[in-house]
Image 1 (cartoon, rainbow, N blue to C red):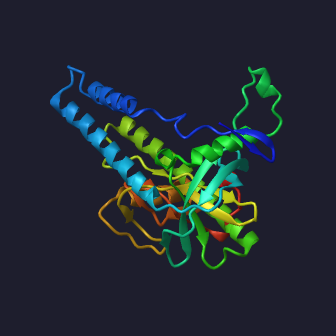
Image 2: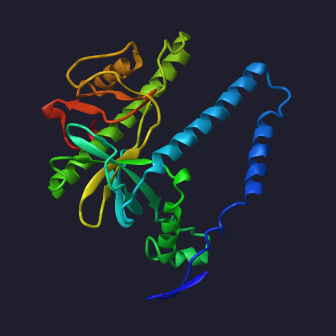
Image 3: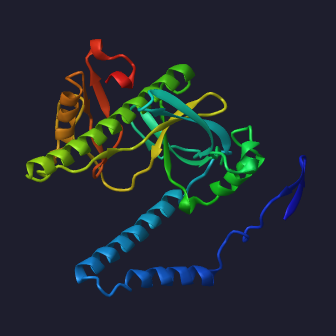
Length: 306
């Protein structure tokens, strides 16, 4: 459909242009399920695992739908997404389109959390295409239009959690620095988690004693979203599951799991006793929102030195 606007004729796809018919959707679902059961060499145990995975995926999709069901978004805006590259020790910035919920869905003593939709606008140019070589701007009118259309598809959107400080949110410079510090710390924690996993695998292979109960762990990647008005949020993916806390930043441990405690100790030894990552919490073996203790004389502000 063409719609006249202040900028001339603008192409707006009809609501059913990019939607599969009900018959086609049913056919895709049926063929997918038949593929899951079509392997005759599967053992009963393997078939049960595949069926459990299918049912878990369906439950996760239903939970995502429920999370978006009462989303009441503010007007979409073009913002800056900034994330920290631990390998180069620098910040990387790119444009995104975001839409924040009107009201927070969670509130603690220090921060409140909003659901957020996010669409990437910058597309890496293909050097093999002549038309891409001519692109100077990081995004165009068409990428913005595509972003607006993508925001409507809630079922397939990652649920982002946008966090802000309750007290310091309006102190823009101070709040931005706080969001950036949280992002750096979590990126550092992820970097140490990768080293921890490699060390567990190495010891398991070289000693022949197995993993001794240690799990592979990971931390959510976080980034900073800066809106056009200068307000900032810390953003990370929403994780569905039972949230657990394993230790605190005051020396207390909780629960029966030993992998989180081993990781905290590993960070202390691996950093030559310069830091320790604590306050381990999250869903399963996927952690978030850690705290890093530094000795004052060893904190340089640069990840490359720690």
